[in-house]
Amino acid sequence: MKTSRHHIMRATAAAVALLSFGLAAGHARASVPPSEPIPATDASTPPVDGALPEMVQSWTLTPGGSADGDQAGSRPNLAYQVDPGTVIEDTVIVYNLGNVPMRFRIYATDAFNNDDGEFDLLPGEDVPVDVGSWVTLAQQDMVLPPGKQAVVPITITVPVDATPGDHVGAIVASNVAVSDNGDGQVVNVDRRTGTRMYIQVGGPLIRELAVTDLQTTYDGTANPLSGTADVTFRVENRGNVRLGGTPIVQVSGPLGIAKRAVTLPPLTELLPGQDVTLTAKLDDVPALLLAFTTVRIEPVEDAEVGGVETAIGKDRTLALPVGVLLLLAALLLAWMARRAYRRHRAHDRVAVAPQPSAEARPELEPQHQ
Image (cartoon, helix red, strand yellow):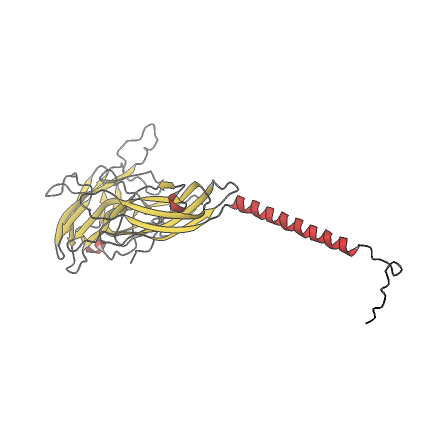
């Protein structure tokens, strides 16, 4: 089942949480803006002219890159292909890049896709039930002086009954600070960054995307050539590996005439069992009585994925030429009104026609047999 949607912004007293994952370039690196709540107990830059130095709070967590884990490596994330029951020993490194000491909570958690289809993590207080629960950390709480780093050994124990396919989560370095929410209320802000964790468990791998709940709404205008089609659909990952794809939405009239199409931003990483609802708006769609919608999800080319078929969904809806119908209705009403008027006039003429008087009527002579 799909993980319920969670907002990352939470608070412990009117909760707010900020998740900052800079994973597109490889390492999970977050540069957090200065926040007033944490006082600088030790600043690396001496005061100038009596002024306090600007407080810089910045940190990162990366996979260890060597056997003893004391150097950062080139790994963009923690990724493994293992069999059920495997035990993995590895390290992560936490760096304090700021100029004040910082306290961190280090923990593992599960990932999901949020409402926008983006990679997201469970809130810090939620207990993981998948890959996040497989991880044991040698240290979970620490205080790092400015400019220092700490190597944290991790052990990942894959259950013997783990299901085949991708299990996705992250290892996170979290720092809690006190902040003003702008309304004079003090809240705890959970700021976190980390590295993604991908564990693919051996067994049959299923690669399947599906388009469901496809609906099209046609909005006609006075101009029968400039209607609008609003398309809503859901993309589901029915497989057990993470997949990506590019949604292409097409609307046309009967026999494919007057085709209109739009390509939506790619879904870079839809996790197993997850789905996302997308919308598309197509302009200048002619009103040709019927509109036929086709949605295709073209798989992202990936040598490691392979074998993913294009997911297709179809729908049709009425595309009535409103302007033409209104004109025809007006002409019909005018014709009916004219016909009723003419019938009324004819009836009035019959009603007022002069009747011959009794004196003017000719008398008929009796007929004798």
